[in-house]
Length: 167
Image 1 (tube, rainbow, N blue to C red):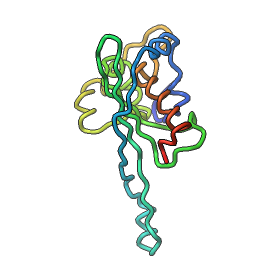
Image 2: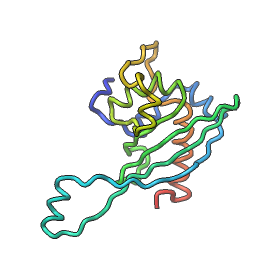
Image 3: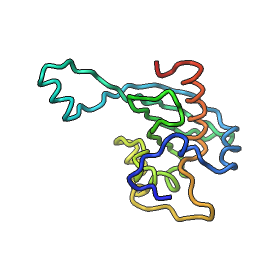
């Protein structure tokens, strides 16, 4: 399935192999912080403002997680949610990042092509050449996300449905 020019939904990102799902259960996930990022004003919004319409500010929500494995390693995961987050959790399009090597060498390139990769100055520096070099294909294909991002998405889903984290 080509990923180029097609943003993936959470449902599509979550289609990972059973081994990663099983290994994700041993991870300790902690939501570290939540940020609001102001959405850039579109050309259409600028015209409406010029015509006297009230400007509405829309924010992306960025969630920063720390994920600790049994080996003692800790990885940083970012999940960015668009302003119009839908009630149907798995139908939303998000951007993700993980600081692990598996994400860097298997996921980052394809997620960047499908506009699902969360990028800022720090993550661009961290990923460096991984954004330019396609991962080698393995039998069964390459999954979209690592076990750390998967574990965070499961925690995020719980927090959206049970704790109203986006309200």
